[in-house]
Length: 91
Image (cartoon, rainbow, N blue to C red):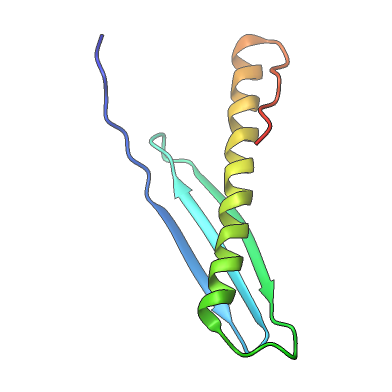
């Protein structure tokens, strides 16, 4: 059996102002397709301004959505190839 090593590099980009952080996560798959997702965080007005925390929250939310988008893509490919409906994987 042949094993091929495959790696994915996930990119995260952030846009921030004093109260909002937006994250975009993107992974490019071996077939050249890209899967993207968004996340956001909002600082409450009484909280101190900690941009790193906003990035962590927005980034985590974007990565969570990215994971769900990858699961959806995989199920669509299984269904298209098999002609049946696959059972969703719950995370």
